[in-house]
Length: 214
Ligand code: SAM
Ligand code: MG
Image (cartoon, rainbow, N blue to C red; front, side, top):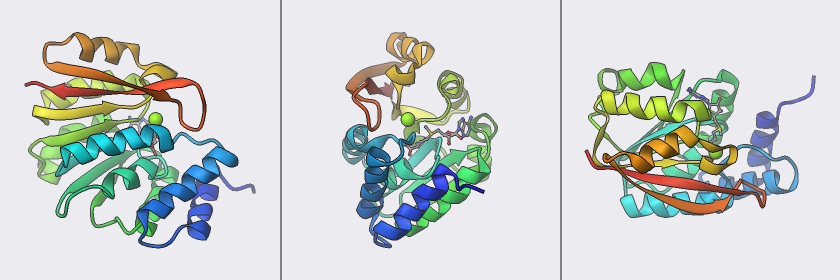
């Protein structure tokens, strides 16, 4: 039977990227997705915005919602300070299996904990199961109808502190109007839009950075 796109993406990484070199993993995936097969990674253009937000924050406890093949996981993890920890959630077992290999190829498995399951099931268990007090940074990039309920769930579970930064992908394309309306109008957030383009295309998309004010 024909291989899946994530399997082909992994093959490209194994063929063209250097083990232990996250930048080469990122470049190999971007080249494949720009020239051969589009895939739903945050991509290079929005990826450089993601990089600057992560670098400025220098977070120690990071949560990623939606791993897919591990592209953004590698992007974020490569910038984290020693001792920092990134927990990434993925409910599709086939994607998770690919992501584990991509993350290991980049040499970042010590910084990353890939957790299989649904965000709505795992968010309430972060404290007891992973000993997390609060997150410094959360990257939201899972199914778009979950951004708002999972944000409220993180608030209710006490996982956000004054200064926690949420960065949400695809706020224009496909779009998350309910989430944007919430973070832009709530007195508990200060929110900024970073205009960019949908991964590997010229269509407008962007990232929304929202600082939790407590
Ligand atoms: N962040 C990745 C990147 O930029 O490389 C792309 C993530 S992709 C856009 C979204 C992923 O979220 C899919 O792999 C999907 O299976 C997963 N997902 C969607 N809803 C989820 C949920 N509620 N819990 C866990 N994973 C979810
Ligand atoms: Mg995305």
